[in-house]
Image (cartoon, rainbow over all chains, first blue to last red; front, side, top):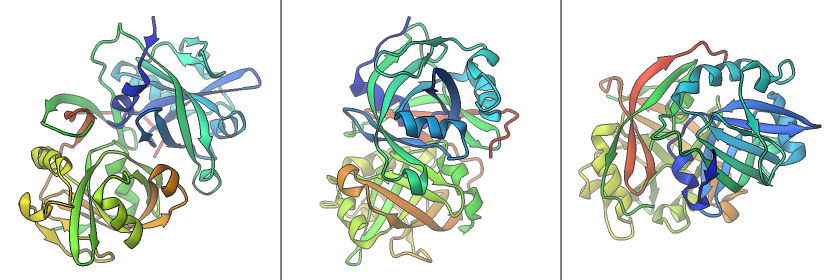
Length: 177
Length: 177
């Protein structure tokens, strides 16, 4: 169902600031977390910076394996996205608990999340700011999108469980990419 | 008109991923650019990472002075925000050209943008990733909000001048801050 997404289009998904899911895998066990602190760093190959708190169970897996998948959920998944953020992979098998479907990635060990409309397979390329800020720089190796999910609306966290949903779109004459 | 915004609330403005303006000042001359590549790094004191391309006129000013203001515009400013991004401070006095009002900041030399609903006075606290990625880590020293702009809707860039505007908000039971 998932089809190739050109790497040159990845920034168009993350630049607007959606809440995303991040999957990791360690010792054969996959985990998912919810993440809002990410940004684009370069268009192509796409580089992404993100902050994963050292208090999160995913932190150790990401630091050790240097691999993750960023999966982008549409509005319909919002309740699950929040519940995923409310518990820890220390205690919960999240794919099973939340009825999410994993699928093998092509370039990394962590799985794709089939219910998400886009999945980005990433490796850590710079760890210099990890110790001080928990800030990882990732390169997207492979990107997928689900053509069956047309015009997905994403959610943006405003704090304490309040999310703003994508509304209308406007087009302005920009010279910017 | 602008009033103090507690530093603990800053992340609620930037985490949702709005397009922002960034002001710098060098040799007595202020400049503005449009920016979408930013993220929160820490709640309090608020740390922000951002990417300012070395092709942007603001890059040299930010690197040299280590100071900037991040100003957050509401939807009504969208046409100006795009035009600000379409030209360079090399050629244009942007405050004058776009009829924007500057006001002195309290802790840094770059000015506030009065028409924006929030202004964040920032200093560069980490430059380790500047040479390789144009990535700056900023600390917010002082934050302002305009109480006259109630429930501002922000814009989120999807590429090539297409912006998604804040729509409805939803509330879900989150344990996350």
